[in-house]
Amino acid sequence: MQLSYEIPIKYLKRLGEYTDIDFCLAHLALYNSSYLSYYRSSTKYKICDNSAFEMGAPMPFAEILKAAHLLNANEIVCPDSFKNGQKTIDTTAGFIDYLENTGELGKFKLMGVIQGIDMVDWHNCLNYLNNEPSIDVIGFSYVGCSAFDSDLMSARIKAVHASMTLSRVVKPIHLLGIGGNPLELRFYEPTSSIRSCDTSIPVVEGLAGNRFDPASGLTVPKLSRSSNFFDVNIDDVQMDNIIYNMSLIRKWADESLKVNL
Image 1 (spheres, rainbow, N blue to C red):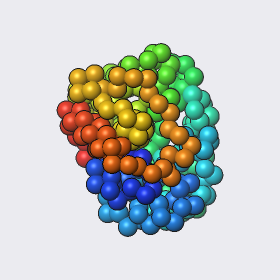
Image 2 (image 1 turned 90 degrees about the vertical axis):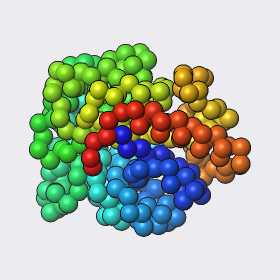
Image 3 (image 1 turned 30 degrees about the vertical axis):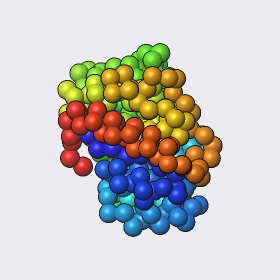
Image 4 (image 1 turned 30 degrees about the horizontal axis):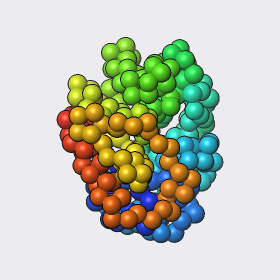
């Protein structure tokens, strides 16, 4: 499993060495020159996210596409709508039409994100993404899988299992964030379709002095990412915590099967 981390901007070079691929946020690429410069020069596989998690709604189509070009991205995360499968289908289809009408369809791989308010809505969204030929990768948002279980870790594990056994998904899967416990990554070993995961959890918890337990993962309630996360300063103790947490996530991810990009 390939890993990517959301990292405070001052420490992209220092902590970027621990990432396998780059997961880049469209709004930061457009509005922060240091962020753009770092990722634009990177030779790693680059995913341009639509920034819905950070902004509360995805960026406009034209801005997502502009960010992807500025980043020299390989892949774009299509616009989605939290816990709304039908709206996600509509916005994803609209984005694909926009790319086709602007002559941009086929220049980037496309990740479609599954959302759903309930199981029916979720499966309807999954079936659309699974059958849409322009979608190359399916993104499993932990928010979007919440209909499966009240525990977010269990919810996404169950959702991925359902996609493999009931819907016969064969497209690569990307895990969008980690909603509960990073130990989740250990439970995907039988699922060969999982390609990658992005998360800020080792940084967020390390900043607060929380170090993962090798056997239990996160042993305290998960913290939310602060509004100034990308602008924080990191001291030596915090840096040690972050690198330690990343090393454990790497170990757990290595127990999963890799899928080629």
